[in-house]
Structures are given as C-alpha cells and as structure tokens.
View 1: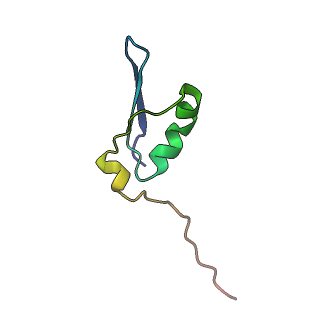
View 2: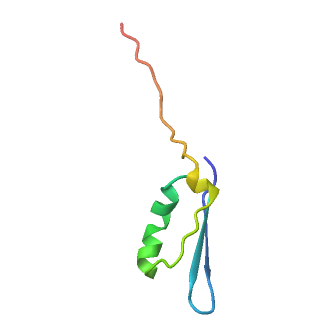
View 3: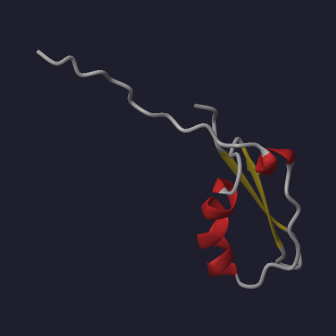
Length: 67
C-alpha cells in the first residue's frame, strides 16, 4: 500500500489549505470530510490526477477443496 499523506497549511488570514497525497479516487474526499466539517465552508477545491485514478482494493483469495 502506498503511503498516504495530508499536508495542512494555515496562512496569516486563517485560510486553510489541505493537500492530499497517495490517496486515489473519492477516498481523498472521505479522508478530508471531517476536517472540512470542523473548519467550515470550502471555498475552492482542486482535484489532482490521483482523484481520477481508481483505488486498488485488497482482498483475501482462497479456495475450498471439497472432500
């Protein structure tokens, strides 16, 4: 699994910028939702190329042999 990273910047006027790296698809929006809810109204959103990539899902695969 790739490393997931959040970078949060606060400027002098109190504006917050959140950069998400290593998260594909809509998972980035789920990851930042609680931060957005706590801080208030989102005034701008720029989606990176990772947003448009499909996240890989890991599954356990196994076979059952009938006896």
